[in-house]
Image (cartoon, rainbow, N blue to C red; front, side, top):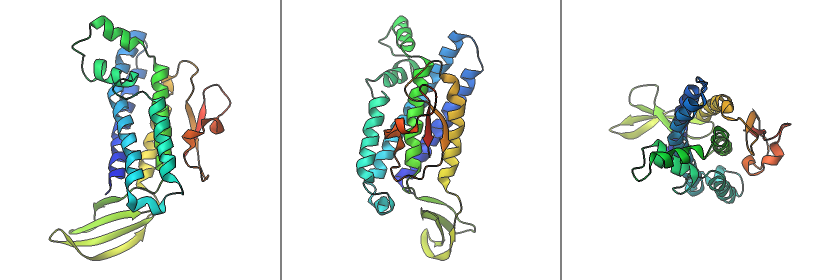
Length: 251
């Protein structure tokens, strides 16, 4: 019902594609085959990054939801966006952007096969896993915010269901494509955001196979976050677990 929810669901679609590619990747043993299968991940991973930044932009710009967000959310979102674009090189000239544009989405006509191989070999599965987990960490932070509005078909013909603020669900009667009356108000125990978090958990678990060496950022589990400083990705050291490179993400 708003652009933030739209971008959130686009992130979910990218996660579904990534999950299928990781499953295919994990089913082969030969390193050459694994590398070729991993090449497919750059397109949906890039899409996840693009839509995640757009999601942050929408949260920051949609004045309809600002009154129900934590204090200074706009400034925190700006810091989170800066952190993300600094640590995940998905822009046109960044490594992920080049991998997506030149060896994954299509074969770059101006590059020789040898140059394409060199570009592909310039990264490894651990770096890809780190990019993915940073994106998941930022996505988890955005899931904590009550910034999303939803709509669906109503329980009866000529009715529509709307959820503009957690946990209230409104049902309206529709005549000639216009609201003609109120069908009822309800309280919803679960949020549509829960659906996406289950996808996050699944992809986080399946993507552990990408990590073959120590790295700076790796999510090893999830805990409930009850803190006011909701953007935990900005403070990864506070979420460190025992073990080099492992971080526990709070959601």
